[in-house]
Length: 265
Length: 268
Image 1 (cartoon, rainbow over the protein chains, first blue to last red):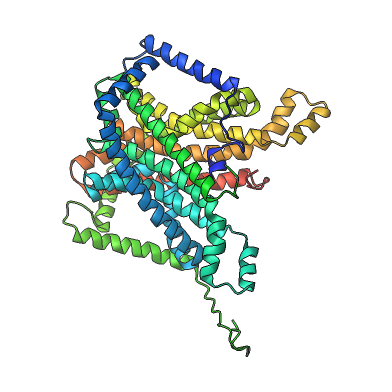
Image 2 (cartoon, helix red, strand yellow):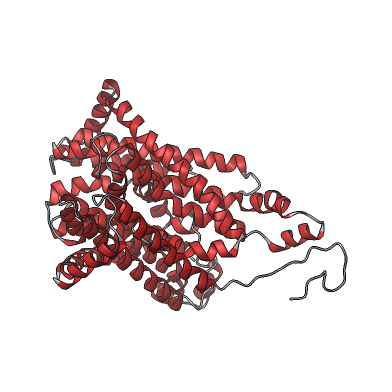
């Protein structure tokens, strides 16, 4: 069975990841921006714009409403696909944690799903769903569901057995044990899975769009790349990064709100 | 198993424990999946889902006429090269970043950024700069894999027990000994975990690269047969790619367990 991916180890974050404003960080960001600006000015390649050009292009795109339109399309598919993945993932993970039969039935497929390069499934998804809104939802779903299942499964299984035994001793029904002990105990890891799943869903959405449809952020990237439109291309990239960071921060806040006793992040 | 009721205790629900064989359930699962696939295939009107039998036949054809092997070789070439470079560069960068605090502080924003960005979005830029070449594909694979390797190696280094370092220093160890005898072994689990994750990402990068630079490799097979509306070949190619990736990942995991068996795989 695939190991769980808890945010700390898989991503290699150190235990204290609050982004402090330190001189080194500020200097690093400024240096980075400077290098970017110089690279762009030096015309290393038509496709690499300077930082200032990118900002201008971004402002223009926001004004014209191009960005908003495509962003809405992308976000729509991402959201539906992700929510589906969470529902299915948590449900399946819970069932697998409770019933060994379900676990044995599903674990090969889950392991495969985790190890496989999800992008490879894209052609199959296109064959199954055609080229429309549904396939984009399917892509977001396929990218994030595996992490949800694995993390939920590990979260629920990892709850301290002594707590469960204690509950038994006090005469708790299986239902009470699930809702009062297992779920709260595993909540932190489940939400961690949610964050990872969201990240994967965003990537899946963008990657999928680059190959499939004519609308959405991914499609914009393709168009601008094909027309050597460096500034606009980088503007879209910046938007995607910002989007991903916002989603992640949002989920972190959710984590803090939902499981405040678990102060890992 | 003797139930409580059988022991004569009233008002206790007999707990029946059925030991289900994992292997049996898994086998049934696979058979069920294959059956559903075959049925789904025969019910769809030929243009969409291919049947299991057709897919197997298509796979066999590809294997026999050498297309499969050729494509696989081309794909793996780019993947291994990209992963190799990512590993070397990544581990070096990771070791340095883990050791020098200022380096880590200044660079971690960039690693986070790269982790969050869908790497595929950078691919068109690479292609514009490097053309449709092996170099472009190798670079794309490299980009996919390097960040995870750096970050995990750095974590491994940072988690070295400082007491060990102090102890070695007090015994008069010089920089070199410190590095090879204390740092490196302690950082191994993190580094190897990073390599494993990086390998997975390398395959993702390979797939991404080939879907955009589809002149060679498995990606080419897929797009070629997709454009000819022959889904059984597409399925065969995709499943082969996925199977190879899973196989390699699995072996890597076994290797990892061998390598770091001496250190418990805890989060520390």
